[in-house]
Length: 297
View 1 (cartoon, helix red, strand yellow):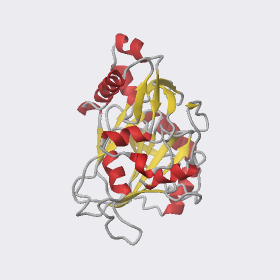
View 2 (cartoon, one colour; view 1 turned 180 degrees about the horizontal axis):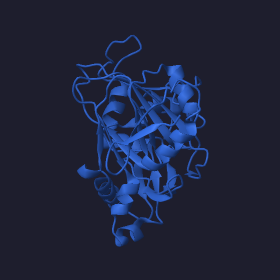
View 3 (cartoon, rainbow, N blue to C red; view 1 turned 90 degrees about the vertical axis):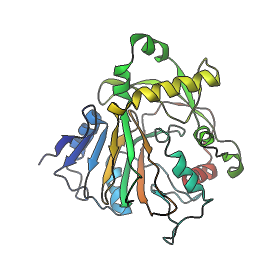
């Protein structure tokens, strides 16, 4: 049996059918080949519980700890505006701030070591309007650059930090952490091994670019994100219950779209794979208590 693949967008992304994600791993290599080519995969009508979502993610590598509780590891992250009792979160909850920050273009876990290869997002409760997720492919953006633009950025490195992206929405994380979170240094341009193409690690988490002032760095990252997210290069996903999206953080940017988060419930579950080949340079030690606060959002 083979999976069926239908493009979602002319440049990247595909809808996959003909597979039951709860049944064994016989099609794992086919799925891996498809995401290597398309960067983003959509599986419809997959209402997975937490354990089934973890089992599926485990097929593609070790799972990241996304627990919101220190010393209680879990690969599950909640992308939600609901508390554990099912009621709306308080307006000052950290998750509300994370929901706002998720509306910035970003790549998951570039501020961690190791970073994430694949991310998975499964819809449990969806909104009547708004709350879409947008995606774009930085391999496509690289192909759109001029030779001069490529030469300017091909050898530079960037520092990624979650506190930077949060500052962009007016959230100062320093009051919620024991000490400053470390930043992680990464190459801006990378070779995307599964496809043999070049990609760019651009995200709102970038707080510094080698050899540039902060203003110059922000202008560069904003310019590259604008190229990557030009309307003709964006796939916008309107969620339905049971949708599962899987994407490759080595080449795909994403952001959430606003919704009436104080009026309507929205609840999704996420897991991510650790990148076992990550060769980034760590500029500090991972702090488990801080990491839990980051995940708690």
